[in-house]
Image 1: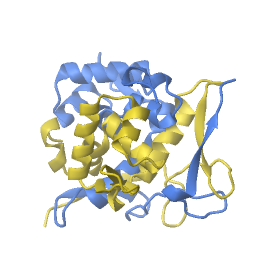
Image 2: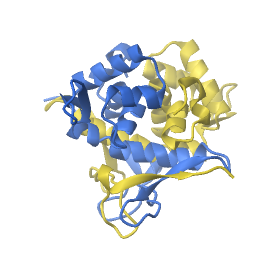
Image 3: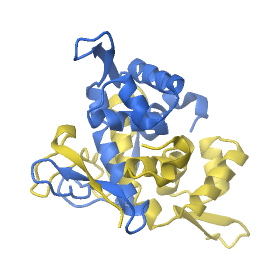
Length: 150
Length: 150
């Protein structure tokens, strides 16, 4: 694998994905957008991070095509930050992160939150990888296949 | 949400998960372990990162219970770094990151690699969230439900 400075050119999709959305604040901004936030001030208030850091992260997210800007829905002079298709496609990553966090990052009895099905109000099942024929696939059931350029 | 310094105590599982494994190098170390690497020198050579940074990341990963150390499998004086159950459970996150990277972080014709089913040699299907009754669930089909302490 290549050095950190060139992960955007790395052949591994994991490396490129982490380069684009592996930053902690970046993922939490996307999370908040998925929960309905659209405005700089909303992100800033909820995440409690410095305005210059939020501004920098949003600028990169727009440049990378994960967010787009729109005139404010309320007709004000502000702009809204809206997830693109590429941004909304982060959803399975968000769910996988959340479910791992639910399972391994809390002690019994701690305050937390869970992801529920909007239709039934019930907790969503654990997401897992399945083969084309439905077999569940774990770490040892897969391998990496190189695809050469061209 | 709380400040960056206290994400480990945040009520949101996404925030806690990112705090533990959101670092780019951390995720790439876990990736390499899932591909079979166990030795400091293997991680160091493949990732091309400074030894002190790798050493620091591995120390934290062991402290957080994601890796454990074992006497070297080859009987040498070195130690192996092995994923725990908590570490192996990162697999769905890794797959979700990879599949997003495959879809959005490469131009046509670039060198890359894909995840294939070891049994069939075929590319694994896209992982997705499904409801208990099998309905596919997207961003708008779920909501967050708070769980109070106690």
